[in-house]
Image 1 (cartoon, one colour):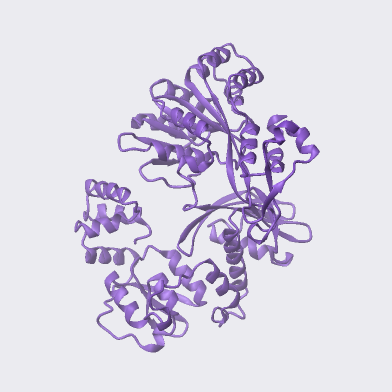
Image 2: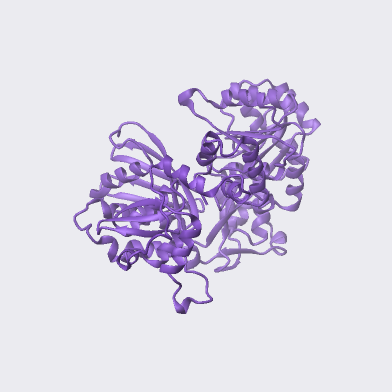
Length: 569
């Protein structure tokens, strides 16, 4: 499959090999098939000739097109590439001069594949283009499956294999003994792979006075891991900045970049942030695994009653639905799940985000770019001219954005967005503090939902837990209540890194704007008044939902107190 689909589709239009109508039809077919290979559908349907496509790509990338049927590849060339690499990456070596290997591949846009091969082989790798059918035949001919593997699935070059290569493959070190950068490249890659294996959401590279600290954020909690010695700090910083296409000569101002890598069959995005500190540049990598995002609302952790209420809200014809919470509480994931649920061919959905964390099929996503004055407000204003049914604004940060969003809601659009508030009723006060008139908030707002992420107890080491006196006092658990409810706690094992927790689940507080609450907002009542009224009329707090999940053995009372203490106070 062609990796850079959008670039190739643009070329197909420029070369008049396919028109916009044919490409849009292929996109719809790809969505129906659950595929992202739009170019492949155009080729399979006969709209685009495969041979002409290869020729066009070769011209664009300055590569040679070869026919693998025309010559026999020498054994010394074949032996330059391991069979599992050839089968996994779908490449065949065609020449080797000892320091430079040339491979035939089907997709010249997949520069990450070439970078990976250079890294694995410890040598320069160039590429030529060959038809897919010839590549498959050559792989079968020159790299047949081993006899003992007959009938079994082809061995994948997965994360564990990549780690083994980094640590043990002597071939990688050949010719690199004097190369100071090779060990840094391997070590940075190993840290990224280890973080991914541990399901980390962030990697923190932090310069201290006498050491260079590396920490992973796993299930919301930071864990320190073995990092490089202090004297390698500058090398590490330079390597990461090169990978993220940042300016390595600029060390005085913050910089942001992005890294795209493949780990096994997974495409991983790394959002990179660098900021100067007194002991050097602190770097944080945010790991975005496209395959891990939950786009199914029930899998977010809603109980049946909350699920019914949320489903009702996201199917309103207009109004604003706000999701609130601190950074890292899962707001964006929830919004993506909501949009995915209501995304149909009968509706036009547009989002404006900073940054676009995940690409959603069938949805128009706009990236904020302040360098060209593409702010949330500017993008939102232009989006309304696109006649959308549903709009998602990544975050309402100022009065201008808030007013445009409210006007959109009042003119027949359903608007989703986020705010940074501690609880759901606090969204009203936040909008009013920005300068929005209370009567507009009362008219446009349909609901606000606060959320947090609660760590799941590890199922492998879960055991019954008797609440301590402190837990009973803080949570108000009576002896009568405890007689009918059991709780659990993780003992700690190798499956959870000896923390007692593995994975996270959402907890929610849903503030529905009823007629009575709208009148209180119109009267400019305080958040405390709104919260008290909503609680008396059935709104469940974050702590209430968290305790329900602890009762069900999903999490622990200790985690309930830790996550919800600030909100309850």
